[in-house]
Amino acid sequence: MTRISRMTVEDIRFPTSQHLDGSDAMNLDPDYSSAYVVLHTDNSQGLAGHGSAFTIGRGNNVVCEAIRAHEHLVVGRTLEEFICSPGEFWRSLNGDSQLRWIGPDKGAVHMALAAVVNALWDLYAKAAGLPLWQLISGFTPEQFVRCIDFRYLADALTAEEALDLLARCESGKSDRIERLQREGYPAYTTSAGWLGYPDDKIRRLCRQAVAEGWTHIKIKVGRDLQDDLRRLQIIREEIGWDRKLMVDANQVWDVPQAIRWMQELAPFKPWWIEEPTSPDDVLGHAAIARALDPLGIGVATGEHGMNRVLFKQLLQARAISFCQIDSCRVGGVNENLAIMLMAAKFGVPVCPHAGGVGLCEFVQHLSMVDYVAISGTWDNRVCEFVDHLHEHFVDPCRIRQGRYLAPQLPGHSTEMRLESRRQFAFQRG
Ligand SMILES: [Mg+2]
Image (cartoon, rainbow, N blue to C red):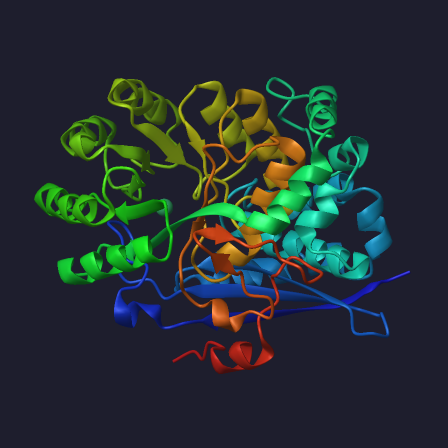
């Protein structure tokens, strides 16, 4: 038996705003930060689960405090209890009646839940001696379904439908695992197109991305139309027309403005427009999707999608062509598995959001589970990659020729190096 003996929480912040890395139309000067939790156990080998939520600076302390508020729900419980029924365990963490009031299922308290839940999965995978993607991919459909809390989902996906879907994906699993280990999972890069970068830097980074084998590239848009047109021209000159180009507005537009702006950008053939408007606006996204469909532009969103209910509605309303899960915004691995199952049912490809601190490390596992065990394909699917801050992780993601190589170390790749955590511990004042 392995008992969770205590929880420690750390406020870690990197001064990324100095170089405008991560700058976009909404987020002008992010300091990439981590609300970091360690679940320590009584295991004599020092087994511990690590997890975090990603923020961009101010407010990281709020999420840290919200993580601490979950302490009584986790400390004293056993890993075996979690393994036996991860879905019920998840509901017990998410269902504390007093904490629930400051959500429910949204905001700082839900991001805190993600950090705790991801730490539990890290603990489970480390104890099992497997990388997380391989642990979950190896579940039987029955085990898999036990990870999900189906509350509020019955009008879109029942446990029986999920079982059927997973059972259909059982055949060919071992071939897909082998292929994944050989070739890696398809990815795209956002490293070239931050809004704060000058044109010559964009040109240089695009050239570099092509040389590195990237086939999908994303840039930020939405601050100034003439700027966007000029930058897209530069990018198409560098990457040609065979590579896929995606654009991301980070929520700055109203619905009619999004449609008009994208009609102007359409000649550059964007594959998707990401976060064209408020992340909560299901019907707005649906209107944009209908207007842009004849132009061959899909709508993508999800990185600020607060919970599985919002994703359910986006799918039901045919508001998205690409489902962008984020490993640290909804309530961690369990809730993302539910969202991925719904996306598979609605035939919408999952193309995760990543970047920040550790999001690439964490979410690659989920894309790999999607490929091996849920959708059974990587057609039209790419997982985001941004080349920032990987050196701080014990098991950093590895990219080769525009693909994520499958993680091999046990765990969820969530553990940050102790030296980095000490060096970037946030000092107030
Ligand atoms: Mg984005």
